[in-house]
Length: 326
Image 1 (tube, rainbow, N blue to C red):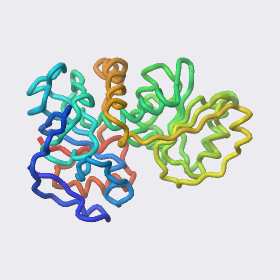
Image 2 (image 1 turned 45 degrees about the vertical axis):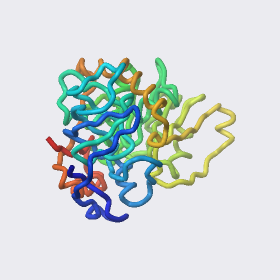
Image 3 (image 1 turned 180 degrees about the vertical axis):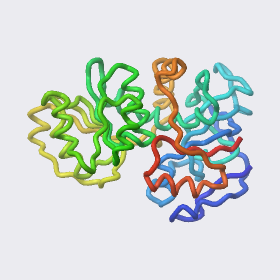
Image 4 (image 1 turned 60 degrees about the vertical axis):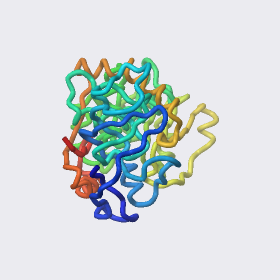
């Protein structure tokens, strides 16, 4: 099969087209003929040598795919050979065939193409796990999304809005802020020209938000504490602004605040399977009703994975970047 490999840590041009044998399936896995694969920030980190591949995972980049099941043990599952699915994987998505744990496969939502479905798994699993399971966003509570125009951001805005929450989002331009608002955010906040703490406090009559989804970290964390409501929670999912923060722990104590962090890739299949079940139950119907939609900024053929990474690193996109194989 054709695949994209990382020849050495470095800039996008280290991504090169190659020939690889088809993946060997482990117990509980299926073989997917890949129609499309999503590009995600962790792929860039892996290419740079900053995101180690979990033991036993493919060294090929790519954490989400959509396509046709062409092999594997399907006993006891709702799928069969020929079923069209999207899947969260530990690696190997940038290829014509990919092994995926059966329990991490989801049916392609009615009305979506495989190209659209390939943009769903990584961000939807991440958002549900962190915003709803870990941070516990519940009825009547508010959410602030840092980086609202990213793939994670547009997913978080749409899911939380569709479930009835007030959502605010930061982005780096007025144009991106308007895009966030078109997706359901009550207010897009331009972090280059506005203080998100002041804006959030004003929008919430001084209370602050209940949950913050943060992919920036660094000096943002101290500021986020200032715009959290009592009993508020920060869910850290990335460290784009740095791994160290100077925070007022007195506020954490007095106001019962929580700061948690997680990475999804190394978690066991059973953990991800539970998220898949909740997504299919609670979110997939919202997609099929048109209340949540894939946001794809640009597609590239497999051979142009390097160009796709260049676009990802430019941060000029809104939504997802996808490799199209079929």
